[in-house]
Image 1: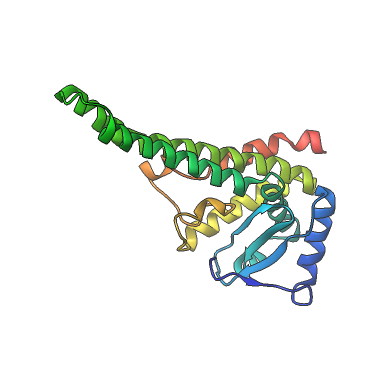
Image 2: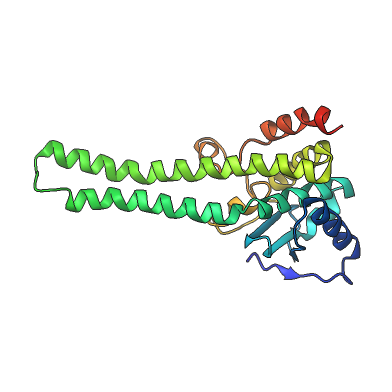
Length: 223
């Protein structure tokens, strides 16, 4: 995925030390670590369980972020693993597909009523079912990002470092858009390419401004 290459502790001892500390804080196993040969600063996590998971960071993210900001990003990705978000997204996609399929089934096997009104209603359902399925999937994806932000801030103990990282990563994504598979864009901590107009309404990620606001509201509680 994304031409990610495994990295060893000998190659990146500081990153390994950082991840080891954060996994200890989160009380979870050490994931496999990968680097993506892309200059855009970004990161993602994948894996259906904490015991079989991986975190990938781009080459560009280590050049842009401070160590504290990188800790915040990795803590966010570890939160996705701990919260089983890859599995949740898979279930959401399955449900979305089932909703779309139901619309088509009702069109072709909806009964013997062939009146114009019935046909129009069936066609409307076929058109709306995929949209409804997408809205459900996107809502789940955005909520999981908010949850990973909050849990990540707790794991690293510094919500401001993650908030600062998100702002810088968004600017990096705008300056250096990254071509990724549409099915995997939801995995990244920030959307790999910027959307405009209607595209923003169907974004897999919540607005960075709102994510930052929520994180900064956590500062008093985490000191």
